[in-house]
Length: 83
Ligand SMILES: [Zn+2]
Image 1 (cartoon, rainbow, N blue to C red):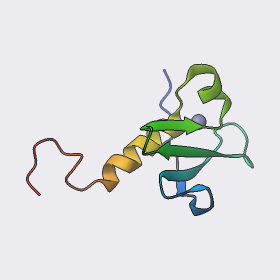
Image 2: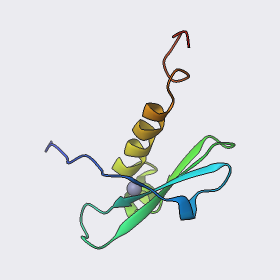
Image 3: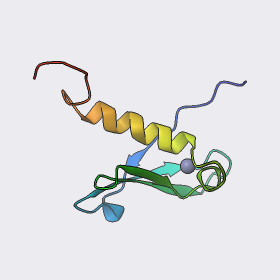
Image 4: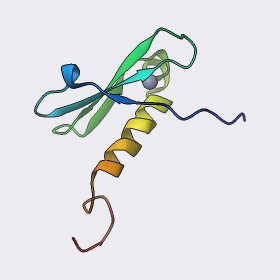
């Protein structure tokens, strides 16, 4: 298994709504392609536009979005930590 580059996500306000957090992520294989990754808070559902997500239901962009979200939650994401 080759070591993969981390995905550089950028916040995507134009795709975000009150309940949806969106990022744009660069394609690993196509220089000028970016995919939109969304997280729907109400449904607790991540989604990505890339073919990997379409075929496998998971992808590196999605993982990066999950990591970004966890990093964003100061105390809630850390189990048992007092605020
Ligand atoms: Zn993806």
